[in-house]
Image 1 (spheres, rainbow, N blue to C red):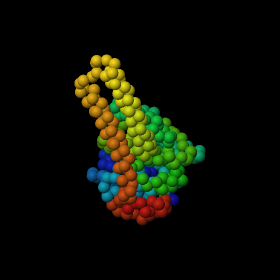
Image 2 (image 1 turned 90 degrees about the vertical axis):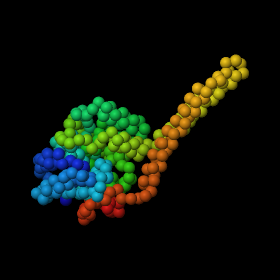
Image 3 (image 1 turned 180 degrees about the vertical axis):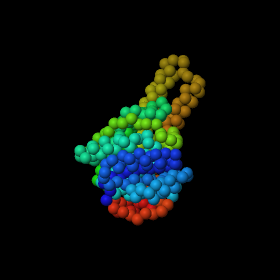
Image 4 (image 1 turned 120 degrees about the vertical axis):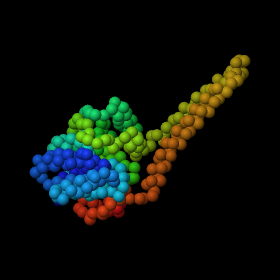
Length: 321
């Protein structure tokens, strides 16, 4: 059995995959211990899968799982955990923004007794000010909305003990936010600080749209406080409306300056309709997620079904295809 399993989700990474493999192998070979590199091809449209297959013919440590289509980064990570056989499981992207050279420091923390070692970004090179600002706002908003202690300025780059991975395999929710789930399961956790580099090649697979979707998944998966917003807004608007009613009555009874125009009326109507539509949208997000869970479809479908091996528990057996 492998001591370490390295999970590498890939999607259209032909420009970087060879260099990513070279650096990962160089790092893992220095450990002089058994390991496996699990590449999850998330429906790539380029030559990513063919390149990995060619590498696998020369290197027995490589395992390739190919999805039937693009299921998403978080699902790809989940598939890697389902098939990982190592006593320690490491998640890292192929774009080399998270440097593989940090892995030995994570392993050192694991050997000290920590069961989750996550990478914490001190600096993010090659990213726009907007992306840095939006990431900062998101993590702090998520921290304020949820009671789960999700570390700030972290991604999915981390090491997890086998017992943590076993716990993760039992959770099969569809709209996944893996870093939040890892925090939710608990265990002893610590950080390794590093500087996030620019992409080695290619383009980001997380444009603004996907970042927004991931943000919504994170908030709705770990907090129902947005639903409480309806009650808070309703109370505030009701109080404001009641005060405005008292003012209007006073003007009508005690003065001759009662408002006769439509401006204030239209403003109130637009405000109330806006609040109602906002809350319907939030409620709709939660209902949509309930609908997705109720269909009980598999999280992903593999183009070729590998034999189930040690490391895939019975819960996962019934939820992967």
